[in-house]
Length: 190
Image (cartoon, rainbow, N blue to C red; front, side):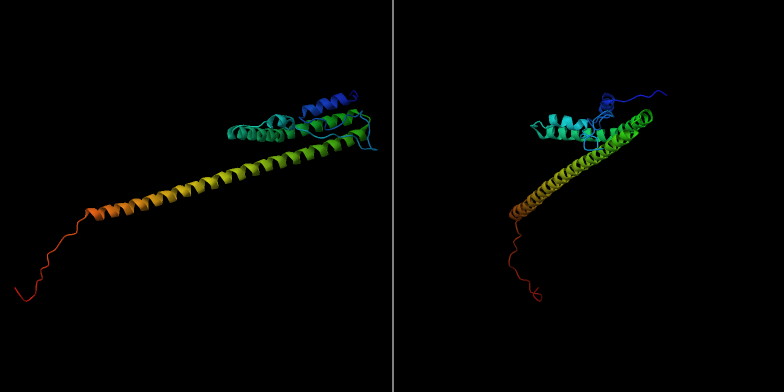
């Protein structure tokens, strides 16, 4: 097997294919602060697209559409994370077997694993926050609808009572009481 030294370009290319930017530094990178390598922030593609989602939406439908698109992007990032981690594991395995600087590969792998874990937890937190927000919004909508429905029911009952009272009043005006002449019948006088 031919030894191949991976440089910064290959690592950046691999990290870009994972949907994460600047997650780890190549094996030829400079050390910063002793044995610690520079590891930059993990960034998902949805984070870069969030700037375009910040546009002011003029209607509720547009806002709802932006929220659902952003939510689906977060879910897709979370789904893609598994394949990204498998690809990174294969890359680091190949890099470990082909490189003389095994400690540097291990340290870079540790940094990458930490950043990937933080990224995963961040995505899970973001998704759970959005799910909670959507549920709260739907609960508020349902309670608002229930309130409006109970108001309508109360109006219907009030109208029905008014109609019943008016009907009784009109019927009492229409019905004429029978008039009996005063005539007494004494039981013994026939």
